[in-house]
Image 1 (cartoon, rainbow, N blue to C red):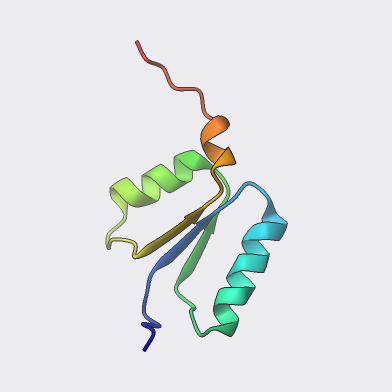
Image 2: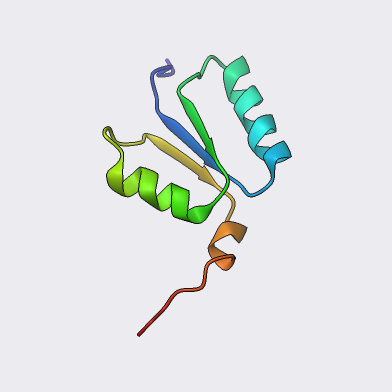
Amino acid sequence: MTNKALRILIADGQHFYRLKIERALNQLGYYRIAPIHRLDEVLSAVDFGDTPLDVLIINAALAHSVKFDLL
């Protein structure tokens, strides 16, 4: 049996893909979904969210859009 109370975060830079994934999850009965388009927003949601996320669906290309300062 699936857990319909899962907190799901969708992270993708393309609005079309976020919407498509969200609609597919809605059709399966999942409604606690947060679509996000930037990696810094994902990190903030994970670090400072009041309740933990259960599922993270992320486009790996978002990681290439951020430059990390190693110094």
